[in-house]
Length: 372
Image (cartoon, rainbow, N blue to C red):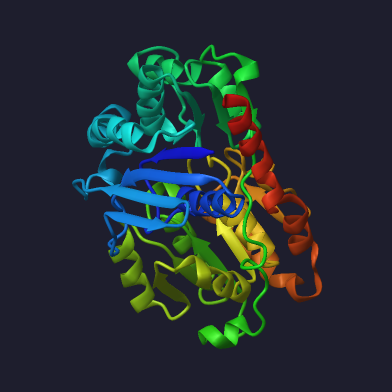
């Protein structure tokens, strides 16, 4: 089957969606499918990129576009939509004409709009996947466009039951919406022995943050909490974003804060393994939290926000949920530091292996087959 994947973000841009799409591409190609990815150049990470890549049964076309606006427009959905839609919209019909896919698989609202529109013109099926919450207003253009996208998709795949309810509330048929679950490479994401030593970290209790360096992800509150603990807990921070300069200044000032910048997927298991706990302190609704499952696969428990769908990614046997505030983080980190049983407890890794194997792709494959 020939599958066109439409997405705003793709590797070498770094992020949870990009990593999932890499995993999806790997499984599809190894399973004998033919894949074409149409996306933008990296919009949030300053990395080298190629306009066109081709391998056996796998092609990627990255569209040049203006960078520097993505984070600035996150809080303005209408402007973000206008920023991200035009070039992807104009390029898609040319790819459809020359590639002739059997099905379109779009990721997110922008790609969903583009995919559904052109699928109607070319008489194709379009599956739309959401990777986050949108907090749609009760009425207005934003909700109307989203309703049109989802209602006219052949299938809508959501990462959580909560996300499904959000889309159903727009008036989309229940039978059209299906929940799927991320999976990870369990060979790559596994405990690394001697990780602290390899990274030159002392044996002190260590917390880890992995993600976009924006206020919504709660990284500033986490830093304040670590400073409140006054050196009793180390903090490793991995990621890129607008707060990078601020975080680098903290790392220069405090020996117990270490900023490592963007970390390639292949090295993330080393950092998860070096940590005694991973913290996901998001202030907004968390769509699912890929960081959670990667951390658990490396046998590292997680302190997560109680907002969004984090409770669908893990349970209290492998971590804890809190209302994110400085005091709550201080108390929870201290509790973990006082009762650190990571080395003798294999609950996390067993949980991840049970729930997040590549078998989870079957929901997506089934949606392709039913859309042919």
